Amino acid sequence: MALKATIFKARLQIADMDRDYYGEHLLTLARHPSETDERMMIRLLAFAHNASEQLEFTRGLSSEDEADLWQHSLSGEIETWIEVGVPAEDRVRKACGRAQKVIVYAYGQRTAPVWWEKMQSACARFDNLQVYFLPADVCAALAALAQRNMEFSVTIQDGHLWIADDRQNIEVLPQRWK
Image (tube, rainbow, N blue to C red):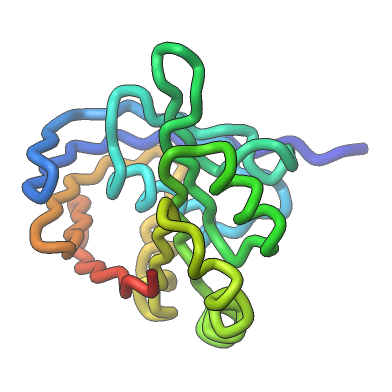
């Protein structure tokens, strides 16, 4: 019998002073049976970092043709394609060809640096690609926040993200690799 996705609910109040974006989002996240809390929370962080009314979660791990998050224009073109983890080179190349902007949030203290060392020269030609790295301690702190019902206040200023709930406040400074 196939395992079903676990449903999580999140309320984000976002104050992004870098982009002058302020909004509240009620989100439903489906965590794939093979997905960890860490990866799911990084998807939530990626949403907060790029929040807009049109940004949406996709089927993610369940689909090879979709990003983890994306944003479409009113005419249907993909404006933003967001990947979480260390995607294969062909997946990054395909995303850069289909979307106006592609963002990768890499994590994994051992795997991400090795992945980027291999990908760096292949990705140099993509002007529409941004790559961020999230350190292991930040990822672990985010994973510890995972609950079936979550409510966060997210403040973004000068590239720093502060994610707070009623128990704690985590500062995230994604390292920009590209």
